[in-house]
Structure formats: structure tokens, C-alpha cells
Length: 472
Ligand SMILES: *[C@@H]1O[C@H](CO)[C@@H](O)[C@H](O)[C@H]1NC(C)=O
Ligand SMILES: *[C@@H]1O[C@H](CO)[C@@H](O)[C@H](O)[C@H]1NC(C)=O
Ligand SMILES: *[C@@H]1O[C@H](CO)[C@@H](O)[C@H](O)[C@H]1NC(C)=O
Image: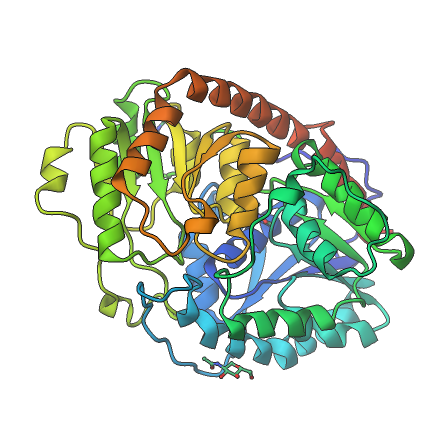
């Protein structure tokens, strides 16, 4: 996206500055960092804030951009009080990563340094625009008192899922919903969150209302109906909605700058669409028993796979991670599958993997980043939601967009998913007529989503309209 081909009045560098305030957890850091990469191409300076640890983590794990575009972002390492980082417990009945709660709690202390930074910028720029994670309302709340600064909430999940949460809290319902809507299939929230993080989320929600708009990392071609419903719901609040996603680079680019991950080289040698990528994001810990069933299911499916077997993140990914137990695979497994399977134990280049033509499916926890990455690459999903809003995203994938098969039904969330179920879903997805149909649809959706961020596409237009608005 080098040339935006966009008629902005010529901006002076000191006109408008953009500040990104992510929640310091991987999935969230990554989102605003992708967004930050897009801003300089519009001629605006961009500032990305976080603690030293989290800025380092975000940069290290970013894929899809080269170092030149990263060099245009001003990173600010702000102080964060020290916090403890307990180990994950795969045996917890709720799979929400409770080990990260201290990070949530520490993040609220960014309020003072963020205020100072925005204040400083506001003396130099005509306007400061703060784009912040929907869970960072408390950190940016002081911005509302600055005459030349304004805030935009970055919604970290689909409009479908965002709407579902907001709709639940609205009484009485201002208008009816369609009976056939996939929203009616959303499962219970039980088992999705710990009470502590729910309380954190509610406290953030209570502070909403001073923002000038909402931004979504989604495209109207997949989520348009729900953006419209959200607009309808907030019609009186003068809040603007912009669906500017997907924000990751969607074209295949060789950004490896010299060294490619070995799994990409392995993929080069496989047939088109023959490999299923298996990965559950940065916050999932599985019990040993579940790992064994998954290994057996993959083995029995006789399909090719890349499986990322990692420890879940803890509060500081650079210190203490080695104490997290490494998931153990069944005896002899890697040897038995070595001709058609690859196990990756470190951070994997997910975007490049999904982009690779040999990849034909994705077994995923359905975090929104993984969903939209997969959607934009036209890859079908075996949906295995773990916690948070993931069961809702799974409904969007399987029932709304119909580009995947549900692997774990939330009703059975307390049970181990059997190797038989895994084998069945993987085979249906990768090697059946049913899978072929789903694959065809996913390819079409992927084409439409990529077109929406290309020149003249609907997401590109939304982005241009956002930039015009903030530089008005
Ligand atoms: C947007 O989604 C992409 C996947 O398409 C993800 O890689 C990226 O982190 C997200 N960016 C933002 C700003 O949400
Ligand atoms: C996080 O903060 C909440 C509310 O202040 C408190 O109840 C909880 O004990 C804290 N949890 C951790 C792990 O620090
Ligand atoms: C990507 O670049 C690397 C190093 O420059 C090179 O070895 C590799 O073959 C390239 N891959 C593709 C798919 O072009």
C-alpha cells in the first residue's frame, strides 16, 4: 500500500498526529501495530505507546511488513509498574488466560504517561488523534479534556461479535432482529471469561461515551450488515463508524529479508491446498490428554499438517517463559508423521503460512486476528473456540459466512475433544465434497475481502474517509 492515491489537501507535518494505545497483550498489540504501519502512507506521523517489554514483543512478532515501514513509527517505551507473571494452568475449567490478569491490572497505570505524551503532542500539532483499544478507555480518559485531541475506539473483534455483546446489554430492544440471523445461534457466555477480567471489561465499558468514533478491523463485505446495525443502535450519539480492515498486508510479499522460516520451505514442496495449519494463538494452554487426542486425530486423518505446539504467553514473554511446561506429544508421534506433518515449537509466521498456496485449511481457536487473516487469504477454518469472544467468532465463521466447520461445540466445552471428532472434521474439511464447497465459498469471500482493501474498494474508501475526517 505504498501509494494511497488519495487526494488529501497537502498536509504540513505539524498538522495532525496519531497516537496508538494498544492493550499490552499479543493479539491486541499486533492489531494496532499493523494499523500504525498504514498511517505514514497518508503523510501523518504515528506514535505507538507501550511498556518497553510490550513494544519489543510487538515488533519482534510482527509479520508482513519490512523494516523500512516500521522505521516510520515513533515507539514510546512508557513506564509500567512491575507485575507478577504466574504460569498458565491448562487444567482450569475456564480457559481464559488468567495468568495475564496482572498485565490487565498493570495496564491502567499507563494513564498518566499517556496523558503527558498526548499533552506534549497537543502543543505541537493542530490536532492529536488517539486510537485506542476498546479495553483501554480508562487509560485515555483524560484526553477528553484536551481541546485539540479526540479519541477513537478500536474494536478488536468482528462487528458481528461486537454487535452481539452490545445488543445483549440494551433493554428494551429498540428494534427487532431477523429470526434467521446467525446471532440467534450464539452460545452462552459461561466458560468464556474469569470473573476478574469480566469486571475489568465492565469498568472499561462504563467509561465509554467520550469517543468520536469506532474503528473496526473488518470489511463491509463480510460484516456490513452488523456495521449497519451498530450504526442504527448508536444513531443518536453522533459516533462515526469506520470498517477499515483487514489491516494486515493481504498481498503475497516476500518480507523475510534473507531467512525464511523452515516451515515455508517445507510448504513449497507440498501440493496446492493439501496442508492444514493447526494453531491456537498465543493464549491457549491444553491439557496433556487433549494434546494426545489432537495428535491421534491428526495422525488418523492422514492429511498433511503444520502444527504449532507452543507454550501460552505469560505476562512477560522474555522472562520466565522457560518455566512454562512445554506441551508433550505422544511417544514416537513426530517420527511416525514425519513425511506429512511438521511440528513447529516457536512463534510461527502465520500470515505467510496462510498465504501459502499449499495451505488448504486452518484449525483455529477463532481469535479475531486469526479469523480475519484466514478469511482474507480465502482459507477454510476448523473452528475450535477456547475462551473470550471466540465462540461467537466461530458462529460467524460457520453459520454466518459458512466458510468453516465447527470442531468444538461450546455446549461440550468441559469435555476433551476426541481424536475421532478431530479426524472426522479434518477429513471433511480437507478431503470431501462438503469441504470442496466450503473451500469454494471461502475463496470467493477471500477475493471480495482483498478487493475491498484495494484501490476503490469499500475498506479503502472507509479508511480514506476516516483520514479525511481526522484531518478536516
Ligand atoms: C487486523 O486483522 C489482521 C488480520 O487480517 C491482523 O493481522 C491485524 O493484526 C489486525 N489489525 C488490526 C489493526 O486490528
Ligand atoms: C486485579 O485488580 C482487581 C481489581 O482491582 C483485583 O480484585 C484483583 O485481585 C487484581 N488481580 C491481580 C491478579 O492482580
Ligand atoms: C524470499 O526471499 C528469500 C531471501 O531473499 C529467498 O531465499 C526466497 O527464495 C524468496 N521466496 C520467494 C517465494 O520468492
